[in-house]
Amino acid sequence: MAAKHVGLGRGLGALIKEVPAAPKADEKDAPAGGITRIPTDSIRKNPFQPRHAMEQEPLADLVRSIREKGILQPLLVRPASDGYELIAGERRLTAAREARLREVPVIIMSIDDREALEIALIENLQRENLNVIEEADGYHELCEKFGMTQEEVAARVGRSRAAVTNTLRILGLPNDVKQFLSKSELSAGHAKVLLGLEIPQEQSLLAKRVVKEGLSVRALEKIVNRARRTPKKARTRRSDIPEEHLRYLSNRLHQHFGTAVNITPCKTLPNGKKSKGSLEINFYSSDELDRILAMIGITEDL
Image (cartoon, rainbow, N blue to C red; front, side, top):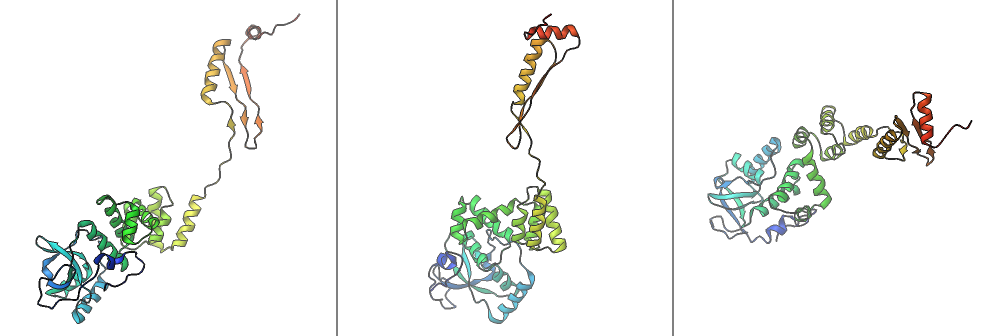
């Protein structure tokens, strides 16, 4: 029976279905889904492998273990034109080659490219072998290359929709920040905090500071919160007359009186009260004043 996998929805067991009993060592043509042994050199790399880096110390430990006990869990492969293509088990295959194993146990599967990427992602996620950039790249490829929605990706790999969305957002960080994440010098928690900043240069500068000073996620949160806590601007007064209409009125009054006219509109204060406005008509002689007064219907009574 397929093993149960906890915490990742479908898991590999659901994708592989039932695995028949292993055939004898001399059975070369095992049916799809069964366990058989094939030459190590007949397996080529998985082009959809989400993991880009492999830590050397754990790999060396795996090589020693394989030399002593062999490969305890079969690799997953699919037929290829020149042999087989790896689906899952890259570390085991690499270690087997370093241990100079001529043959490895495999399960041969007939699946398409999308399913190959899904299984590679799920296996690595279950073993927590991926850094956050590799995980995000895998989700992105499922969305972009295979046309899956974020909800479909979440359902297939056993993550929540929010987790997939937040992981994909990390791909929008500057390249130098993503390099830190790829090397595990920054955590997914650090990345989430840095996404709270809108300016890429600030994200880069803070990421470098985190790496240099070894800051925790909590310490980074405090720095970002201080940076985002800008002084509140004083509430400005709101003019009751639009600027464009003010210019129109000024021009009309200038044409009417034949002199410059300045309009200061009344304004609504933050407390809801009104400030006064003013209308200023310029004149440069007593005769010009009399002319303006006459135009508005005011005459001197002797």
